Every structure is written in C-alpha cells, then in structure tokens.
Length: 219
Ligand SMILES: *Cc1c(COP(=O)(O)O)cnc(C)c1O
Image (cartoon, rainbow, N blue to C red; front, side, top):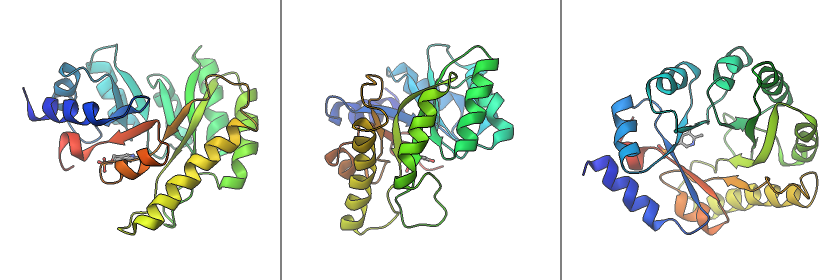
C-alpha cells in the first residue's frame, strides 16, 4: 500500500462517526489523488479554478470535488461546471454569481457559508452577525443548496484561542439551524479542522475536516 493510501486509512479510522473527510489535494498531482482514490477516498478539495478543472477532466467521474479557496467572480463559471460543493462562499456577491452561473449551467451547487472568526486580517468570510442575512438570501436562490458553514481557526499554538474560534464557527451553524435554516434537513455540515488542528475541531463539533498535508505531505 502507498504512503498516501495508508495515511488515508489511518485518518479515516480515527474519525468519529458523523465526521467526513475532505482530502485537500491542491498543488499535488493527479497521481497522488489516484493513490487516495485507490484507498476509497472520494471527496477531494481544491483551491484554484484552473487546477480543479484540469483534475476533474482527467480523473474518475465519481469523485466529489469541493472548492475550498477564495473564489473570484471571474472564475465562478469554471468552478460551477465541475464542483459538487463550494465551501468558501465569503460574500453575497459571490453567492449570487454562483447561483446565477449554476442556473445557466442547469445545475444546483451545494454551498457552505464561510464565517470569519480568526484574528488574522487575511482570512475572509462573513462576520458572525452577517450570517443570518446571508443564509436567508442563499435559501431564496435557485442555483445553490445551502448545506452549512465553513471556517478556519486562528493560526496559533494558543489552544484556548483555537478552541474559542471553533466554538464560534459551530455556534454560527447552530444559530442558523435555529434561525434562517430551521426546517432545512439538508443544512447539516460544519466544515472545520485542518491537519494541525483537527482534534480540537472535532471536539468542538466539526462534521467535516479538510486535511491536506497529513495525507499528501508538504506542498
Ligand atoms: C489548504 C487548505 C486546507 C488543508 O490544510 P492542511 O494544513 O494541509 O491540512 C484546509 N482548508 C483550507 C481552506 C485550505 O486552503
């Protein structure tokens, strides 16, 4: 068995029931994706439109592609053509563009709203108090299906800080579930936790972890 395959199996067997794995294959070649595929992995995350398009064209059609990077509106059409889910919806403008492109393509795309809780200025997303409005709008749009929220914790060794960030991400999911998204059975996804912080994310209520380097090695 390849290293990638054995790491996939190791990570998957350690995930509690109800926590899914997005294998983040960005910047790694299609051969690496195929090694994970051979180990049974079907959900892969990419962060660039061009790379996603190339891999989706070359690789098996039963792969579920998730877009997880910052998406510019001029790349929306390209991504909507192949992505099963866009996890990184970080503005209303992007949300509308995705819905419009999906309608034109005769599709409906699963989306997560990205919530900004980390302290770093560089991370994007809706502020927690903008989420309710964004969710209300998403639920009126014919090209998208609102599945939940995605977020990143601050990049720090301060465990208290990281845990607080994950609590805030989970909290915004719960607020929507009792607010704008109440009565929506497909609203079920809290995407949080990466290679270095997934244990804390799972403790704080993640339902989907996004793991790159622990599977594929350094980028
Ligand atoms: C790259 C990336 C990941 C994976 O990070 P690793 O540290 O390699 O596990 C997860 N989420 C997002 C949004 C990313 O851009």
